[in-house]
View (tube, rainbow, N blue to C red):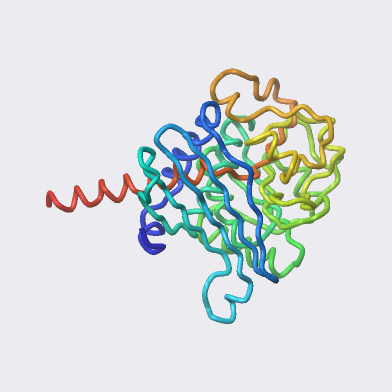
Length: 306
């Protein structure tokens, strides 16, 4: 499946359904250790896993020099293997779909952990991923206002305009302290290597979804926040190794899948602060690729009957 095909088939609903399937699959499936590679300034990640009939890998790459060639810096390819023979079953190019997939995990956490009446969303970051995060969260909560925090004022203003233009939601730039204090939901979507705000700015009842930390040394959240919060993640071992919770020594982490399956508590009161770390895992990519292939087959079947 080409990049153009997958980009034409993906939407928030498919991504969220695939994300839920992937998280629940972690209870019986396996996500293997992440392989991080680089060549000069170019970086790539290999994530692999297996769950039921799904076996395969996702290769994500970041080639900053692609800007000069007028092509995206990020790419993503998902390789599915035949579970019976190990032979190649499918290759799905999914750079655009990967952005939906990443946002869907954070939205799934919001849907599971945030207060039902959450209306103010603060997004920290104005890059490529941030708009996908806003759209995904707005599908699972009655968002009425979006506050934007960016390193540069001009980028924050431009991004706020994009949010309103593409979602219809009122959006405005704000300083970090105000945006965090007034938020019902905070989503961080950055490449930061140090905390983006102070723990004391987070008010009781807030949910925080952090997706930026995926390598040793990355960090978006203040460690002081952990002692005030209930902590959730996709894969505890991976989150401690390369995710946000590499900075949460000794903290108790609850897999989001356990909450989804009814095996663990999520939010216990409207005053709880809940924090979710999304470090990303292969089963998200495998379920996404399978869902895209099923949708393509369904579309082809509909066209054949016309």
